[in-house]
Image (tube, rainbow, N blue to C red; front, side, top):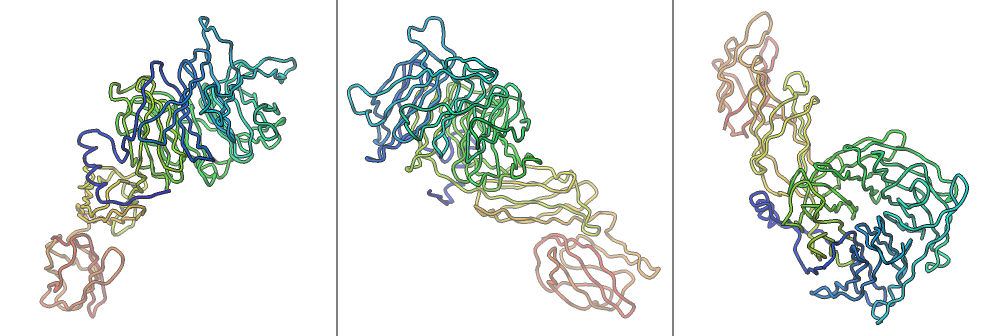
Length: 533
């Protein structure tokens, strides 16, 4: 996996913000179709290392060699008319489902279509369809005709979701003994599952109409156990994908203005949302399918194409790449990009756009820069909510939470100017260095205006002025003594003497808040002060 760091990213990012174009993803090739497209998957020939796009269309399956600059259509296998197809691979076979056939079809329902990928260069490729008879949970039998989606896990088990069997849960087939003739071994059928994926013995399912994702123990295929459920933000759970460490789940809801959402699923008894993000190209667009690729999540959005999100820190998701495959459409609607496959060794991403056809894209996987901002009262340490935090290079203003906290992420890798304002407090100007891959902490102590200019000490009012100051302070009530200037990190940055009731700093310090500690023969006190440039 190649991770590229470049300051050219900054220029690209600024261009995107200004003109709404593609970001960190380039076009390698494209192929058009007379039929509308739907889902997509990829396959790599182990003998030749050639990479193929497996493209679902309303009329069948298109197999495309994408190893060269110009995509080459190798085979087309016709099937029943369907606006929904799904495709996955195991060994040298491709497995295909379809859904929603119509009365004018001349072909019977395929059930499960199996294609031998070793035959793609033959005049007549080898493939078959199967319509197994499935025992129902409540007794009786039914014949598999259609399914909405499928997934094949690393252990060689195939899961069909949204089939015409029972409630449309998950039918489980074993591919290990004979991939050409899968064996039915079990079912999870508590409710309809639109889609899902499996890792180890855990099924992460999308109960789209129920509006939640479901977690199922599938260790015993004919005796599955429900472990947990969790509602998703827009209550139309379309897609789920687990992180490589099995601790974070990502979901999409198939409605306008919905999100890619991250959850901490390390404890199934206490699942919690970490963060959520939308597409930068259009906030009313519909997210469709998300796939985890290392620390990144690659997500297809209908009218805004494909998005790459850096999820290294899932509590702060940051968009680091996008490509609009559907420039003719925008906003809420079921046009445009259906799916994106990111798992080739070459790192190519292939997309299936409903109207525009197949896209072969070249991404740059960029790590985001992040900062955790903590704003608090300089004297009491109390968190300050509703503080306005402005980053000049980002051209954005954010607001701290009730806990005085704020997380900000960007593609930039530059020094930035930060301004923090809050009614009743002295404004703070600071600098921050954005570093790709880092999640820094920026602590911002703020001086309450009521604490400026007077301190009660030994029954006397000690006044300090001017405050803020560029380095000279008058102390009314103290003639002689010494002082220490302490920065935000508690470091003594200057020491000196007080003469004639005045403090004069000999060094130039960065502007911002400090603590001026004063020592006399009578005792000591301290003042929050603010240095001007």
